[in-house]
Image (cartoon, rainbow, N blue to C red; front, side):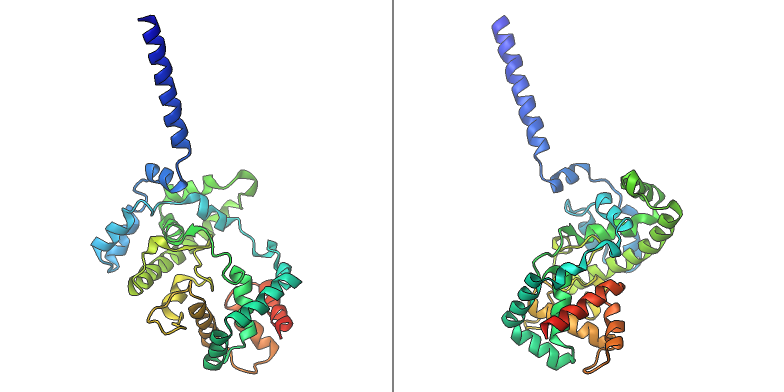
Length: 294
């Protein structure tokens, strides 16, 4: 009995360790699934009250892939545009890549330039800076980012975001409160646009990855822009921002919509490009890249 008991304890201990190791090795999404709560219950009801199909909304937010994501959204409150190194994009290698891109997608760029009157070097510059010409599209699930942001009207959820920010990076509390109020409203509008866009294009919203702020595709459009300004550049009947042809046409249409015209002066170019990203540093970089590509 002693040997059997000892062997049994060893076997039991082995299986316990094995199970523990398996749990630790679970992918992040599965781990989130095990911790999934009902954080989006109020948000779901709000969407339904605003006219969205109850069955679709309940199905979407019951998905294991859709969950509250404080670690992702907390980045939004400590991010600083001025800290980004935009000078990297005017180095010889990125410029060479951009020239190669213009050759590879020359037909789409020429068509967009002809159709919308937007300089193809500007379109290429935007795609270079936004996603390295499609090489980096973001890793965060867009609906989780936007739904988490939209849900921050709930005080308890807001505190979870605050507590998830490292102490050394915590912003001023008053500024944080103001930004949460503003961004939760913005997040809700973008969330509604995402659901409408993905419904129209028959895309599973939980399948779309993007930036920490919810921008998506090669052109890094927010859902509201994808819904209203994105274009089908290859005439396949779909508006897919992960398609180069569609991303190119969409950027061109966006700039035209905001006032770009052939031959506009440099200052006016700056004003239009500022609508794409509210950063003078960003816009100056686009214009420098464009100059080099010419």
